[in-house]
Image: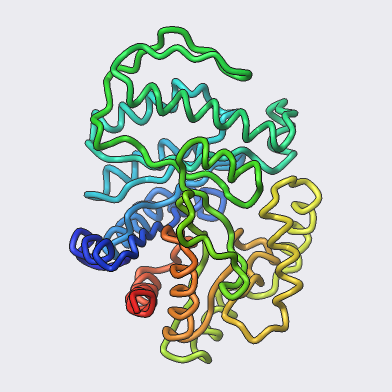
Length: 350
């Protein structure tokens, strides 16, 4: 859905029955020099808004700057772009999350999206003394997010008693305008994640397999989306040349990836690692080399505009309506991606 006229394209997509939304991703503080990072965030946010993205993902983990502060920088330097803030329950009480959403809504009148993270890297969780098993973390996430949602939507005080959280007659002030109620995303790569998405009426986001083998979600009661990088050019040769130059082999990154595999209990991490082996020699736009070299956590689609658009159209046909792009390295990269989504919409509409 990337275009210059977001409202017009949104209406067009609805009329075509597509309803495709595109998010980009904000830079990570660990990957940019300190004195350049703030401006880099502003630049990527402005590129994303100019390209018509609905929102922009802001990461969180133990090594990164606070995502709420990044979100505020994004809001103050754009007109309509919606931060998709990653939320880790171990970092703050659900009341604090709701207060941040309501406060940003009060100040800026901007909608926030919440990317609810159960947490997958054992070292991060261990440092926080969080020993909760994988599936239990998703059960906790449901309680956590439910409290946030109730605080933001209810004019009355909220009382909730669960296994993990208890609040008693808790009221949210300032109240949030109904039209600013945050959209919620949850990882859909595991059964526990999918169950959480159903319970929360959230968008289930996954790292996809190649479109040809991705299960058909069309007609599913769970809205779903994928996280994917794109490198597309006029010709296959040019696209692969750009991709190879951007993601050269990195032995240190490969070793870090192998270590991360040993310290993660995330279903998606294991699934992608297995898929990397299966697709390494296939003639396909689906590419996991950046993931194997620990340069990003999502698969890439690489090739000509037509070929990548065909792959995106297949994902749309299989029911995926939300696309979260990788961090754009330059503004013109989003222009190339624009061409892909324009062609993909036309293909899917047929």
